[in-house]
Structures are given as structure tokens and as C-alpha cells.
Amino acid sequence: MKNTLLEIKNLKITYNSKDNTVEAVKGISFNVNKGETLGIIGESGSGKSSIAMAITSLLDNKAKISGEIIYNGIDITKLSEKEKNKYRWNKIAIVFQNRLEVLNPVLTIKEQIEETLKEHTNFSKEKIKNKIQSLLNMVGLDEIWINRYPHELSGGMRQKVLIAMAIACDPELLILDEPTCALDPISRNQIINLLKNIQSKNKFSMIIISHEISTIIKITSNIEVLYKGYILEEGLTKEVIKNPMHPYTRGLINSSPEVNPYHDLWGIPSNIKNKKNNGCVFYERCNQSIDKCFNNIPILEYVSLERKVACNRGGIVTVLEAKNINKNYKLKNKLIKACKNCNIDLKSGEIIALIGQSGSGKTTLANIISGYLKQDSGIVLFEGNKINKYEAIRQKKGIQMVFQDPFSSINENFTVENAIKEPLDILKIEKEEKRKDSVIKVLKNVQLPTDNEFINKKIYTLSGGQRQRIAIARSLIMEPKVLIADEISSMLDPSTKANILRLLKELQNKNGFSMIYITHDLTIARKIANRIFIMNDGEIIENGISTDIFNNPKCNFTKTLLKEGLFETI
Ligand code: SF4
Image (cartoon, rainbow, N blue to C red; front, side):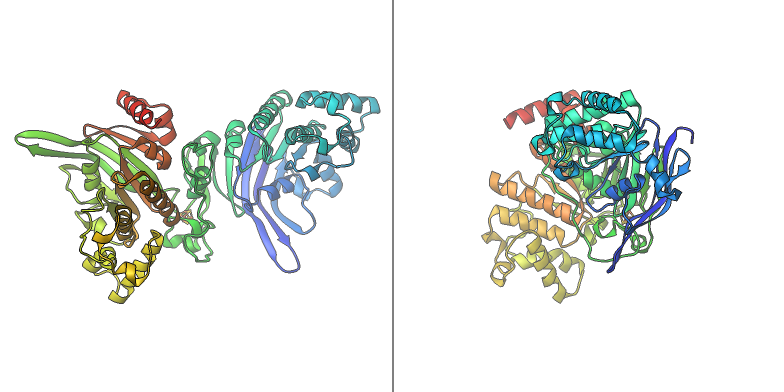
């Protein structure tokens, strides 16, 4: 394409050593257009830095490259070392991660930049002197630092020196590896603004490699999401951050404090299942894998106009959908419209909060969704299939509900063991002798004792917090894909409430189930939910991404609710 500066085609990078071979990059392709800033994100070990080193032809002899790196129509992987040298720094420059050892400790700032210019240009002494001056001006570094050594400079200043060195030969493509890593917020913003300003003057393209999502949002227009050498998602930065479509991308974004200022942060669990596979690289950590994923490597392909995703299921799937739900009650000749044309959807691994005042219809809707109550009209789909009555709550990997009142939701004359395994007993799931093992497993999950004394205790001897944990364990024993938690902390004291919520979020993160959290407590909703649904008088009046709803509510009712609800907490 005419506007394309760099084309990476099926790039593979393998490191060979005596003992083993590591494939760091496994056949990736992407383009960088002229003047564009592309972001590459991914956890450590995803192959980001290897790609940068390959583009700048700086990989050492142990690395073997295949595929093409086409720069302005020329495949630079096919060039001789001498020819590659003409591209390095003059056309393609790199700013390495800002560590003290990147700069030569025995050279002053002036000497460092001078060395770069001497090596890659044939400028006269006078021209070099002037160029150093103009570069320092450009990066906003005061002249007083020119004869200082790297260790005398702050992290932000050293980053400016590295940028000055990289742009010394006026490259057309600038690659920056973690440009704002370890900088304080003021220095970080200075570097971001500096890069934007220099780019608008010099018109170069940039590739920004970073694990700092805030830097990526502020400076890049497009993004590649990398995991273990594969691109798993690609698209416009703002769209991808707002609406990630691959479970891995969502995990990365959910781990970012800048994007989720109110959430407790939970990283992507390292292994949900302990099965090595030959298929999807994210299989072991994925909460929505299917059998096909075990052997089938997904291809990065378009799922919408400007979005590509590598997933056998086309990206994050919708597990639950309630469409046009209506439910009326008759009370002494009076018609109560508990649900009015309600629509709700829940994605795999997602938490949504259903917020509303008492009597707004939340619990009715939850009971309909789980199959406890029949709607007058409308349809509920679980994994794409219509739910018939109790079907979804009577199966493993279905829907489970934890109720508000831990005192009345469990028969208090049961022992702990019998209360937890009751669903398995009733539905005759698992062999009798295996059920006790399952009880022990879920008791561990909800952080309760597993000794005989405890599991033989009667429920009525337990505290409210312990009973609520038992209620959660009872649900978990069915390994639900969807857990509906109906005001589960409202009857608990603040400390027990905090412990239960933390436990629930931890379990959700670890087990990967989706959750509908029903509450009137806005602060809790803000803390745990990805999306919010606001319900009033039987209607869902507003829904959206949690930060959007809290920062920019549209409906007057939501505005009032937030004002009152959040004010109460101050
Ligand atoms: S659903 Fe399958 S292909 Fe998609 S990310 Fe999960 S494991 Fe990979």
C-alpha cells in the first residue's frame, strides 16, 4: 500500500542455545503507516522487544529470523550487514528501555549524542555542535546538563537524552521500548507530550512498546496485543481499550489501574487448567475455551471493520441474554409491572452490576434469568439456547444463584457437608463417595475449615459470614458459568461484607465464571463491575461500561442515584 512504511509479514524469531530452542515470535504480520503511532502491548515474554530488535536489525547471532520485514518496499532481512547499517539509526531508530546502563556511564551527555552523530553521519564538527544544541532544545533539556554524566540526571532527563540520540539522524520510524516505564506521573506526561510534539514536527512514524496502558491510550492510534509470540487482537486503540474482544486483552486492561481507578486489581490467572496443548496459546488461562481450542491454533481475522481477533469463538462470547422480559403481578386487583421489556446481556468472564432501589424489579429479573420464575413474555438464552424452567440451575456448569439472606436460604438443621452437597444429592450428580471430595474442595475455595469437626457442624451454629460462605460454596459445587449474587452482603457487618466481596471477586477471577451482582450499593458496584445496568420501576433505564456510567450518567434518575448513593459514602 502507498501509505505503508513498514510491513511485517509472517515474522518468526527463534533463539537457539546449546540446551534448547525458544520460539519468541511465531509468525506475526502487521503494518505501520507513514505518520502513524502503533502500540504493542503484552505481558513480559510476549515477544515485544524481540520484534523491536528484529526491525532495527539488532538481534544477535543466536536469533534466527524468518518472514519479511519490508521497509519502504525493501525486505531488510535480506540485506547485508553493511546495507542494514544504512537503515539503522538513519531510517529506523530505537529508544531502549530507560535503564542507567543504556547510556555509557563514562561519557557526558554531549559526548553520548556526539558519538551517535559521528558514527551515523558525516557532519562537520561545527554541524555536530549545532545539531546537539538543537536536539537538546527539541527534547527540552537545559544546556546546563550538557557536560554532566548519566548518573547525575533524573530518569525523565535520561529518557530525553535517549530520545535526542534516537532522533539525531532524523529517522522515519522511531521505536520506543517502554518509554515511560518507572517515571513519575509528571515526567511521564512530559515524555508523552514531547514525543507527540517532535512527531508532529518531524513527521516520523512510531512504534510504542509498553505495558503501561495509559501511555498507549495517550499516544497511539492503533494497537497490537501480543501473547507468547502471537498477535491475539488488533484494532484502533480507543476501541480496543474500551471494548476488548479477546479474553487476554480484557485481562490486560482489567489489570490496569489507570483504566480501572476504582477496582481492586486482579491480574490474569496464570493457569485455570493445567493442560498443555497444541492449540490456542491462551488455552490454559482461558475461561471460555471449547474442545476445539485444545488442538486448533486460531487465526487472527476480522471480526468487525477495524478489529481482528485470534479466537476460535470469534472473541469474548455472550453467555447469557435476556430479551424483552415482561413480568406482571396482580395484587388486590392492582397490576404491578415488575419487569417492563428488560434486556440484559452478560459476557463470558464479565461482572455486571444490576443496580436499583428496593422494589425496582431487580430480584424478579434475576429470578427469571435463573429460571426460578417464569416471565410473561420475552426470552432468556443461556449459551445461545433457550432456558426451560429450572434447566440451567439443575446442571453443572449452568447458572447458580446466591441469595440475600444466608439465614433462610439454607436449611439450618443440615450439617455443613450436607448443606453444600445437597444440590449434588438431589440431582444425583457425581458418585456418593466423590461428593465429599467436592465439598472439601469448595470449602477450601471459600476459605472455611475442612476438618471433620467443621463439616459436621450444624448450620445454625455458624455466623452470618460463615453461612454466606456456605451459600457460595453450595453454588460453586455446581461449577457455574454464571453466578447471580442477589444483595449477598446487605445483611452482613462491614468487615464480613468486605471479606465476602473480596472472596467472591477472587473466586470469579480464578474460576472465570460470569457474574450478575445485584445491589443498591453503588460503591460496591463501582468496585467490582465491568458494566452497570440501572433499573427503576421495572425498567432498565441505562446501561454501559462502569466508568462511563459513573463519570457520565445520561438519565436523570441515574444522576440522582449516583449523587445520593456516592454522597452517602463520604
Ligand atoms: S476461546 Fe479458545 S481460541 Fe478463544 S481465546 Fe479461549 S482458548 Fe483461545
